[in-house]
Length: 66
Image (cartoon, rainbow, N blue to C red):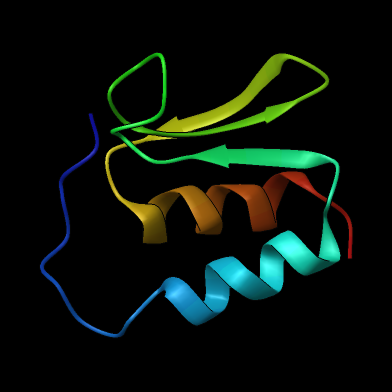
C-alpha cells in the first residue's frame, strides 16, 4: 500500500519535463483519471497508478528506459 507523502518540493516542473520527454504517455490527475489517483497510460493501457504525483513519476522512472 502506498503512503501519501507530505508535501515537499513542487513536482510540476518534473511532470512538465516528463511530458516533454514522453509525449506518448498520458498522465491523468486524480480529478481526470478513471481511478481517482494519479495514473499513467500508454496506448490506452495503464502503466502505473499511485496516490501521489511524486510516487507516480518515481515509478515511471523505474519502468521506462532513459
